[in-house]
Structures are given as structure tokens and as C-alpha cells.
Image 1 (cartoon, rainbow, N blue to C red):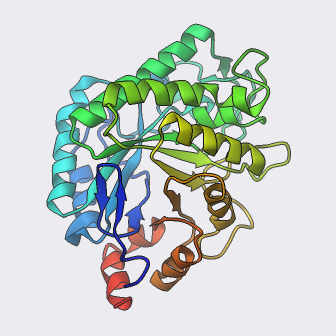
Image 2: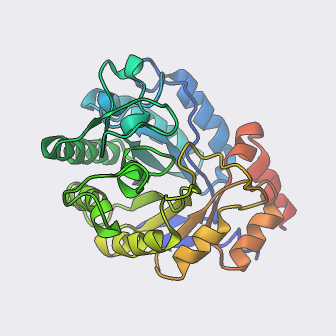
Length: 330
């Protein structure tokens, strides 16, 4: 049996193989973020045949203030639950498990879309947007935790198999983690333990609302690939803290201005990051980034670089990619 074909048990979550579809923004939702037929059709096509053991739904905003783009999916109020249930049903019928990714864009939000000045850990210009946000107050931080918690509750009520907390690609939690954007002098800024304080409070609150048997994933931007940004040692410390706090799977990414990082090429170009995380934690680690060949994915697993392989753009371009990948590994 190939490594890619091996099943994986994570608590109550049974994955039939090691191939997943990571979150890929589609911009297909309604303007208010609700699921529509275009969203259902897209995920029905990608999950057909159940070749992908897990599909992580694209990042969904937890509050209007944290909306990243037009036609982004919403997890921000109870009115979205019915549509999300339909989405889960489509994917489950095709034989895949599914997790919803929750996100707050922070200073990466567009003021024209959200109708107000974006928030951030500190009043530092967003590296991607160039906009100047307002610094979150203590009360604002409490509101963020509550928004993640309520969105996680909706995720579980909709029937998802787990929830993923987004802390990568220069969005709000990543902004707290990164020294580039977190200049706070209170308990949420300074050393790495303070910069992940909000993460740990979110994890604790989410765990309390979803229960012990509901998997929590966390997508971690483990390197900013920018001078003065997050160090690998910081990410290892964070990974250990997240495991101790109850995260079940760590999903590794990198880059502070989106997921495209200049000069990173090759299949599984985040493998040095995922391998470094595996050195210090025992929970499964997801690796994504430039993987286009089944044999390369299998080799990355064999070499112990990760426990699960995310293939995004190849599946985005070719909905039959996963089927052909497994046929090629027979």
C-alpha cells in the first residue's frame, strides 16, 4: 500500500487516506456570504468519488468586520447554518469528510467591503493592503474570541466533521503571531508566548463550545519569509502550545502576504516547516504547497515530512486529479 492510501484516525475523525483538499477561496457565495447553488456545485464536483478523504472549506468570515473579500463564505450568524448543512450533505454523500475554516481578516480586510476601519493587533500598515488599521482594545479582543466561538458552534450545528482556525497568510491571528504587525506592549504582545495568547484563548473557547470529541485544526503561518518576521523557533514553541491546548491537527503554511511566496518552488515547498513541526509535536501535520504529482506526495509522506498532504491548485484545475493520482499508485 502506498503511504498516500493509508487511513488515519484522529480522535473520532476517520480519514480513508492521506490526501486532502486544503481551503481554496472560490468567491462564489452570495454577497451576504450564504451558500448558493454555485458553491454546492463546486464542492460536489471536487468531492465526487470520495477520493479526497478530507475537504477543508475555504476561509469563512466570523464577523462582518473580519470579511476578507466579496462573495466570501460566512459563518457570522445563525442564518447561514441551513445552507452550510446542504454543503456538508453534498460532500458527505460523495464520501469525503469536511471541515470548515474560520477566519478574521484583521487589517487585511477592505474598508470598502466592511464599511469601517479594519482592526489589527497594532496600528501598523498592512503589508499586503497598505491600509492603516485601528488597534484592537481589550474589549475588541473579547469580541473576537466570542465571534470565533459562535462560528465554531454554527460549524458543528451544520454537521461538519471538525473546524479549522485560520492563523496564516497575514490575517488577524497571523498578525498577532507575527512581530511584523504585533507591536503591542500588553500581555498580547512581545515574546512568542504573549503573541499566541489570543490563539490559546480562542482554542480554549472553541473547545468549550464544540466539546472534546470534535476535531479542532489550526492553520499556522509558520514563517513570514520576511526579515524580522516569525522565526521557526517561534513556530515550534507555538505548535507545542497548540497541541497542549487541544488542537488535533496542525495545518502548515507560510508567507505573510497571501500563500504565494517568492522564490519558493518545488513539490511540497513548505516541507521544511512541516518537518520542523513534526520534530516537536505528536499530532498529525498537514503539508501543502506546489504538490502536483501523486508520487511526490507519497514520497513526502514516506520521508516523514507530514502526515497528510493537501493538494489545492492541481485539484482546482482538474477535478479528476485525485482519482488519477490513486490509480497511478496501484
